[in-house]
Image (cartoon, rainbow, N blue to C red; front, side, top):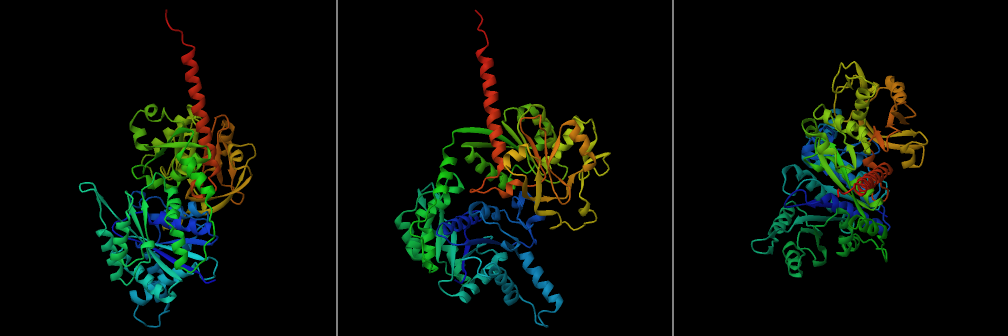
Length: 552
């Protein structure tokens, strides 16, 4: 069977949730037995998001093969459970870089290089790359930005050409728009959707399916009106209403028969009774927790929660596994430096110190690690969070008061965190870190071993600095143990304090591997430890209250 192609475009405004719609559609098609992959085309000129500010673009997601990609690829993996690759995220920068390199080699034989056909041909090549060997039945391509944006025009034109090239039944366009509700008049307005479809038509594309984002249920009359004015069948006009969790979206779209309409238009047979039982069970656990646990996420980009999107979602997965709601408290590390540490962290049942780069706010992260260690609060350090725990231990347990990372203090006398050997001499910033999946051997009997249930794992990385093995003997003698080691390079991957109830730091990014189907074991174990800490401290407070004598 030839690969079918689905394009997801957006109109009216950004941040409507094209990534969630794409991921949900992928999951629904999987329920029908189809092999699916999803890619993202981003219109910005950066070659990848690796050098973008998290405040501006959210987190940078990392794939198994080491691609620094848009955060939407995280949604694709979490919903479908399929690993994405370098080919699943393409930017304008990467497209132009490829075309210019070809021009420099003389591949165009003296022709004038233009947007059409050369840029659009390269975009089409990248789109079809995933489906070229018929590995996938369906390739879903999300077009970043909003229809009408200047920077999106080459991508829209490439979609128009592909729709013509592939012909009916092999390709379709899903257009996501907004139907705003005007509280003053109590009306849902379809005019923005009409204008958005008109903009798409001006670029030569008639959408096949319209998904309307709304905060109120759409009436039959509204659906008829949109279908009539946008030249779309009424059955192909469906709503995507606001929900309490993004994981409800596939279930609601299934009720709208989104999957059946897509399969019908692609001439693909549907499964008689596609089941999403496990997914429904997962959503039910999210919406009906047995308890609540309060965990602090200490970072320096906390104003934009998308900066830690994969960590947020890993906590949702882990919470569902533990049948509890994780009440995630976003705490700015600079506030810890300036304020009362006990006031900021004292009510938490667990502390996670998040990844990051640079010196801003790092002392606050180190103080958070110290507070968790000294007060026996479950601690999870991710990447820089592990490094901060190491620095804190060196300063306050080993007595190396000037210990630091050479990323922050180049000439520190105690470089307990140092630049990786293969990073020395590298000057370019983009795509040059230690990226992608690497193996890790885990020490039996450790907290990590208990969580994973095995001694060999593979995890994704994104860093330049590492634990300095020259200090390892001193650390282990004092009680902080390396329980995870890369077998090829001897790099330390996991540090633990066995005398502490739950204190784990990892150099890798476990959040990238957490999915609905397979929540990450370290997050599951951390949330469980936080629950146990909450129960224990609650019991202690209760006992103190019970044994207090009332004065006569």
